[in-house]
Amino acid sequence: MEKCITLFSKRDASLLRGHPWIFSGAIHRVTGEPQAGETVEVRSADGQFLARAAYSPNSQIRARVWTFDPQETIQAAFFGKRVFQAYEYRKSLGYDKLDAYRLIHGEADGLPALIVDKYGAYLSCQFLAAGPEAWKKVIVAQLAQLPGIRGIYERSDAEARRREGLELSDGLLWGEEPPEDFTIQENGLTFRMDVPGGHKTGFYLDQRENRLAIDRLAPGASVLDCCCYSGAFGIRAAKAGAKSVRFLDYAPSAIALAKANVALNGLAGDPRLTFEQADMFQQLRRYRDARQTFDVIVLDPPKFASTHGQLLKAAHGYKDVNLLACKLLNPGGTLLTYSCSAAMTPEFFRTIVAEALTDAHRTARVVQSFSQAADHPQSLAFPEGHYLTGLELHLDL
Image 1: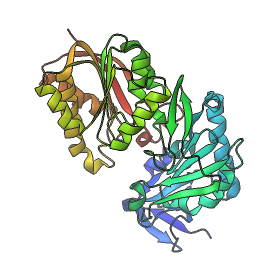
Image 2 (image 1 turned 30 degrees about the vertical axis):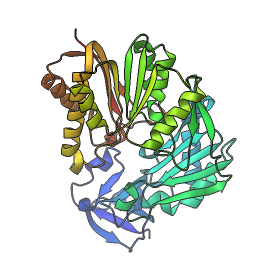
Image 3 (image 1 turned 120 degrees about the vertical axis):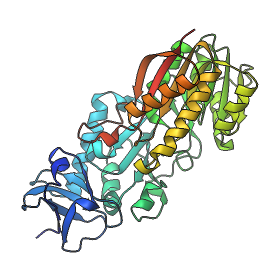
Image 4 (image 1 turned 180 degrees about the horizontal axis):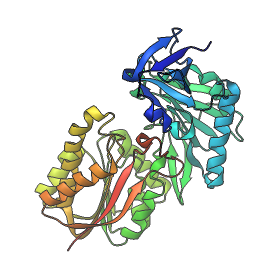
């Protein structure tokens, strides 16, 4: 008999809707002493089969569902099927023709807590929970069978692993080490890649389509790119004919990367471009005090809230930075503002930005809303998978 977890009465509603998480408080009984990452059968209070899931004894999310199909078993062929399905989905959308895209996006691809990004011939992976960690060798073997892959690298250095009772981990998993300095193309621009040392898995692929909006806004405009990291927004603005572009980031490594990418795109020495290594909140206040203004401001900060418990503090941060940006924009200017905190819903983010506008004594129209690119798919059964939200706001004159 399979090792099993049995839920309390009336605690199976979310599973019946297809949500893949089982929290510790929903579990009435654990049978068979499953180990971390081991597959368990999930049953309702009356003994009905609900799912097969990866057990995680150290996490509040005590199990993550692999499958709701009672006929499907969890073995190497299961992971091969899921990897192939994920690849075919991206291929159907034309992403396989791009240099870089997300190949596996966790729960939405039926592989909870597994992230795989493709950069050229190299895959960069995050195994963020006990389930994918236990099946790591099998998953890597399946990934290695994809066409054109030369190396698979691990970037499981996210804090989510600590909540699973797992140590942070990175390094080569299969094949060749990624080159120290290679490049990818994104919508006509070139960016330097650092798989071992870059943010997340190396690059922010989820903003790929969103960055195109600045092509329309930049001609003749003064642009401020906050938390610029690779400089992708600002470089697009410069290429689109911005009057000036300022790159702002707290990390010296990010400023160095932005400068390198500026050079790669033929903009080295361009007098329109300036760089500022400083804390965003402090620097925006300095601009305000100096009465410096901009036509376009990009706010793309790092995650302010990883959990719902951090959401209130994050809300204060988002309001503060959006309030400052609204004060720095010229009449008729544009704010591109984003949140990549999964705990932040689009509705709450809109409320926060609306309050910032009110406190700044500005009014604006929403030109468009943003989300993550389609290679970061979302499931209606798993709203937590929608983590990137953004707005293009056109301030009134």
